[in-house]
Image (cartoon, rainbow, N blue to C red):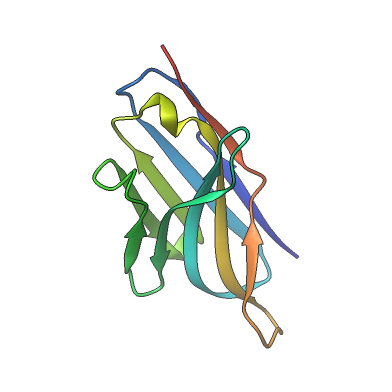
Length: 121
């Protein structure tokens, strides 16, 4: 069984910063990619940032230059440093990992339960 647990969400004023963490645990053989997504009320889930095993990153245009995705591969953990937060960044943030479980023959995508980020004065 594999579990992804996010943390670090909360309420922050516009212009502030937050750092989200996502730790994966369980029978993990390897992780190929990690990513952060968000879903605002009444909207579809959208990509925020992804990072591959090789370190290649991809960001949504709306967060480029403000958000930074990083990983600690030894800890199976992904981070999202969010600076210059805006009210439109308010959403539930989900992490996702494409990983290979021990004994499995294919890569599967796993999701965390989400963490609320609210940007408001």
